[in-house]
Amino acid sequence: MNTRILVVDDEKTITDLVGIYLRNEGYEVTLAYNGADAARAILSQEFDLAILDIMLPDIDGYELLRTIRAEHTYPVIMLTARDSQTDKIEGLTLGADDYVVKPFRPLELVARVKAQLRRYTSYGSRVQAEDSQLLSVNGLTINRDARSVTVDEKPVRTTPLEYSILLYLVEHRGKVVPVEELFRAVWGEEFMSTSNNTVMVHIRHLREKIGDDAQNPRYIKNIWGVGYTIE
Image 1 (cartoon, rainbow, N blue to C red):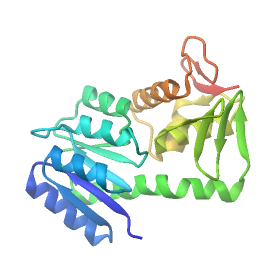
Image 2 (image 1 turned 60 degrees about the horizontal axis):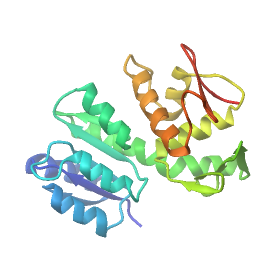
Image 3 (image 1 turned 30 degrees about the horizontal axis):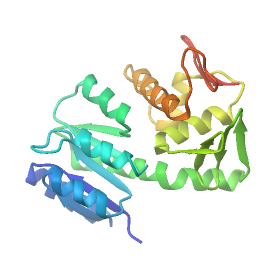
Image 4 (image 1 turned 90 degrees about the vertical axis):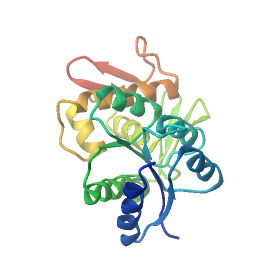
């Protein structure tokens, strides 16, 4: 089955151009030019990745992201017309996986799509081949085969990035993982000045999902100035 991608932008020329580039890569693409059409597609179709413009005339990209994250964990790339840290932090908090600032080169967006899909579809298979056993820490269990997380036997819905962060920390249990190492391992990119903020937002969101108190953590401990650890 072809990889299915949703592209949402009210600038028709951008949406159509992105659609052409993605279809040339063999992806099955659904285009939407407003939030209402996009919301209907999200609720009625299955996708492997979504590209959402933040500024839409009706339902904005953040609201569409909330709709996706209510039921799905596939990667979401946000398009923004400004390189704003506030935009990025809000999107990351809601569960976005990546950001692309307009104007952008279509080939750059295609490369980011491929990177997100590799992380989403291949990471679990690679880990499974290495070791199919469950990983458990103090009531938190990661099933590598199913790429699932439970806390006290209750399922926890994580995004691909959140799952990768948690898995990496559990695999390195007892070791303080520097922020730079965690970012390179999970994002597969070089660490930059804004990367620490990106990691911090994802850790905060992950803590909320697994019921972890930052002041009195059951799982993820922050070693200030160094990184994170699960003991």
